[in-house]
Image 1: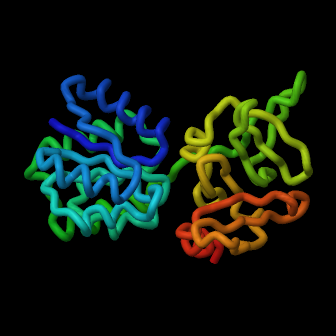
Image 2: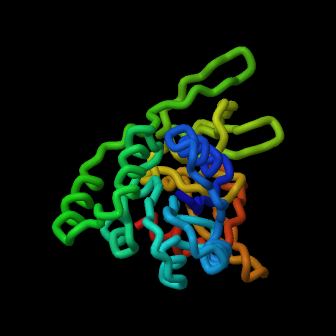
Length: 252
C-alpha cells in the first residue's frame, strides 16, 4: 500500500509516519507535502497513491482544494484537530475522519477501512459516520506545566495568552504577565489544545483566540500584524494576509 501524507507541521507528519510504519511495516510512504500547490503537483506525478492522510488546514488553505484540482482514486483519511469539516469531508472520497491526537486504535480502524475497498460508504453510512464523528469527545489539555527556574507552575489553559518558539524552547505567556517554558513543541501543543480556544498563527506562535485584539494591515500585501490585548498590546505577530479572513472567521 502506497501512501501520501499532507501535513504542514513537520513533527506531526513524522509522528503520523511512525505510527503508520508501526501498524503497517510494509506501507510505502511516497512523500509528505505541506501545501495545496505541492500536493497537487505530487498527485499529478504519482498516480499510484493508494491512500492519502491529509490534514485539512494547511499552509495555503484547506486541503479540500487539492482534490478539487486533481483527480485521484486514492482513499482519503482526514487527520485534523477540527470537527466542523466532517460533513464536507465525505464529498472527497473520505474513508475516515480522525481527530487529533490520533490513537493507534483509531488509525488501525482507518487502515482496515481503506484496505477493504468495498467499504465505500452509502449515503446512509456517510450520515451515520459523520454523526459519530461529531459526537466524539476529545480530551484536550486543561493545564500546562511551566518551568520558571526552580519553580514548576501549573497553569490552566484559560490563563494562556500566547505561546512562542524561541531559542530557549517553547515559551508560554500568561495573561498575568508571567511566563515559563514547557517541554512540548508548538506542533505537539496544537494537537493537544482545544482549537476552539487556540490558533496556530504562524510557525512561531500559537495564540489564544480571546487574546486577539485587532488585525493591522502593513505596506506589504503579503503579511499583516495580529495585535494582542493587554498586557501584551506591544506584541505584533505577523501572519500571511491570506490567513486574515480565516482567523477573523474563527472569532465570530
